[in-house]
Amino acid sequence: MSDSTSRSHATGDSVVPQKLQEKLPKGVEEAVPNAIHDTGSHGTSHATDESAVPKGAQEAVPKGVEETLPDKIHPTN
Image (tube, rainbow, N blue to C red; front, side, top):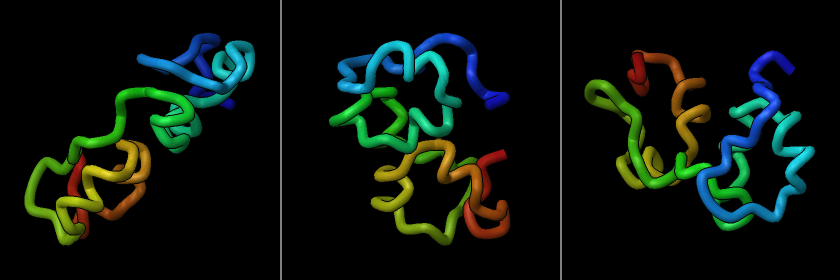
């Protein structure tokens, strides 16, 4: 798990056990809904230019999900 930093990426409340938070990669933590594990990563678009993805969808998914899309569809670089 190369993204693991031996620390949690939560910025708010979490029902995920602390030891598990410390072992999980940041992308996995961000994929969990904020209601369960709050990383503060939802609710903002990370697009750097025009995107083919509807604004509501951009804001509903974690940054890590946005970054998996090709830049020609949803630029994040």
